[in-house]
Amino acid sequence: MIFLLMTGGMFAQDINLSEARMLYDRAVENEEAAERLLKISEANTFTNPVMMGYKAAGHMMMAKYVGNPFKKMSHFNKGKDILGTAIAADKNNLELRFLRFAVQAEAPGFLGYRDNLDEDKRLLLNGVGNIKDPVLQNMILKYLKTSKGLTTSEKEKLD
Image 1 (cartoon, one colour):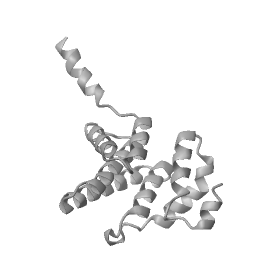
Image 2 (tube, rainbow, N blue to C red):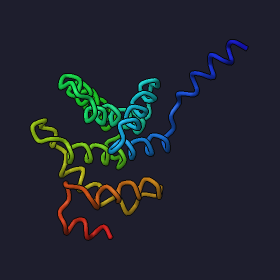
Image 3 (cartoon, rainbow, N blue to C red):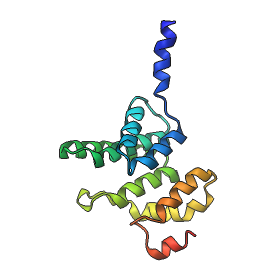
Image 4 (cartoon, helix red, strand yellow):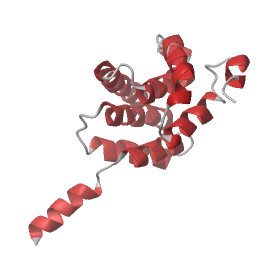
């Protein structure tokens, strides 16, 4: 009985891809969602590159909400490193490229984290129409249509 109670607590923190996507989408405007994404992803050791990408996104989102500049940089850099590792493991994954594109398009210029904007944008624009998962496709299209990283003519081609 005690064993079941102990293991039940461990599984309560598990995160699946649909929950990670939902929390990521909310974390842009909601600190609690960012905290939850980070908390539950930190409690898991992911080997799946996409889940690693959402763990990275959780760190980078928290950089937006913490006040201490050292903690901001720590979260951002940790997320950047994890995301780099995830993309290195699955270079052609559009979901990972989307996560990096979104961060690089929104990150302040002084961070110097914009090296892959054009490459990721090209892959996303060429591949978003071929994504089979409608939830993922809609999430990416929704972001791209409002992104600072796309020109007006690029956004019009998405319709």
